[in-house]
Image (spheres, helix red, strand yellow):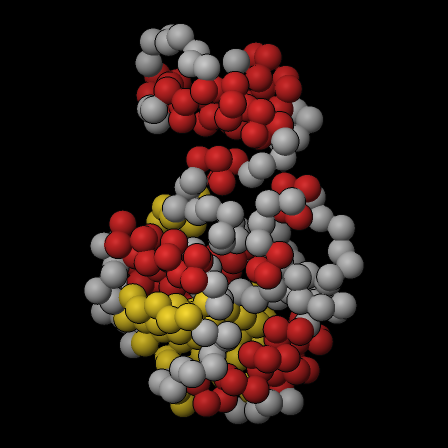
Length: 266
């Protein structure tokens, strides 16, 4: 374990944690059981898992799981790995709707289903639709809904953003691609996560330009759209949303960065 931890320092900010998680997976037990239980022989599969992590493969893809908000999700390279920053959208929605919750939720670019399923887990009387262009991502989202016991309240549809969506929604959640196409990213992001979920043209705004004009017809009169942004994009995306008839406020993430725009009808 010491040698694995030392090796992982080259690729991870949490080498000891990564080593424990990888060994627990190799042994087929939980990390808690590994820490609290008696010492066990290290299986050969641990070396395989360790080498994958040393090649910068994200720990979430190796473990095929990621915690987000109050839920655990299956993730594969078909979907973006949910980040804590995106929980800011759920926080914004909770601040607006409180315990009662929205009636109907739309998650644009649902990926693993993280935002929609976290919201449905929070509000037992809500239902929602997750839309994604990727059939592979939607298969993961449906599996997560089933595993969480939420499939009766979660629908999924393959579409390019809201094309073909004719309903209105009380809450719209959206974490679109917003990274500039020329940006240099950490290898564990650029080499493994789906490019279609990361990059959005030379200024990172291409998908916002598609989404902004769609919101007016999708959002119910009293509804809100919570949209994730890059930390430097607040003014540009706010201007874009306002040009399509939206009133916009913003919310910072826990690190103090601009992270969520909250749009409503003027």
